[in-house]
Image 1 (cartoon, rainbow, N blue to C red):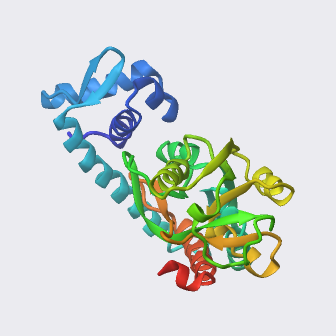
Image 2: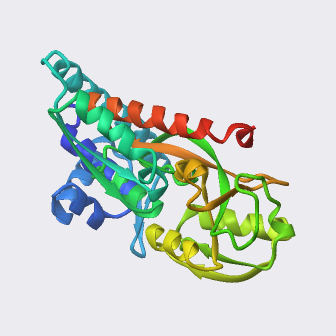
Image 3: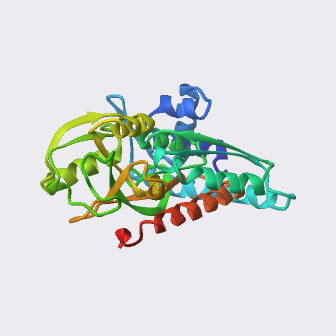
Amino acid sequence: MLESLRDIRLFVAVYEERSFTAAATRENATQSGVSQHIRKIENRFGVKLFGRGSGAVIPTPAGDSYYRHCIDVLRSNEAATRALMGFSSGLEGEITVGLMPTMTRCAMAPALAKFMDAHPNVMVRIVEAYSALLTQQVRAGELDFAVVPAFDDAVGLKSRLLARTPEVLVSDGRLNLQHMAPVRLADLGPLKFVVPGGQNTRRRNLETYFSSNGVHVGRVLELDAMLGTLDLVSHSDWVTILPGVMMASDIESRHYVINPLAQPSLKTDLVLIEPARRPLSLAAETFLEALEQETKRLNTLWGSTLD
């Protein structure tokens, strides 16, 4: 007898969460119930799926192999269900999408307005957060998809490149830089930088860029509040570095002085992540298409800085 979809989902949850307790919470089950389901599979095939000890749950080679096949089963089952739903008239349902401030400031609103006008029966919920939390929520199945900076931890996730955008220096004009002229940070120091927190992937990339290119950092202020960061920059001599797609609307407005980084340039890869165990719904795919088109449009405004 084949294992039930419930057994498979519980196994996948334990594998991805590396915890029976977290898996139980994610799947609305009890810890003992999750353990029983895993033991049932192990007893049926006479193999261990997880090594247990010192509080750690580590997949065995058999567990790794079984997980890869389980993901295919869950995605196929979901795809079959979605195929039947596709025969119903009109696009409807509910989608929950996770976006960083990088995406919500310029790209989200035009894409969302276009999507909602075309599909009024779809309820869209946008969750704004930074990459660490969004990744956790996608892995748990709380989000249909999210857009985050590229990273290495892909357990439980399916990902692909959404956009590559230049990083730009943002200031209030006190540096006397020509708006939109490429700049070499090593020629400007010392600078007072507002940077994201340590869990943010971009923070590590920025620190590597500073140390590798002789950037003179005078002071650092850690601030995980994008509106607060921009407000501080607009009223002081603090500066920040942000993805170009986020600052595209300021190219013409000139509310801030924007300067792409040069010699060398610095670019950020933004990736789409979704739960590996299920495909995107038609509604989610359609909204993603609108978001991706708007992101590409904004990126074209940077012209040669993307070369």
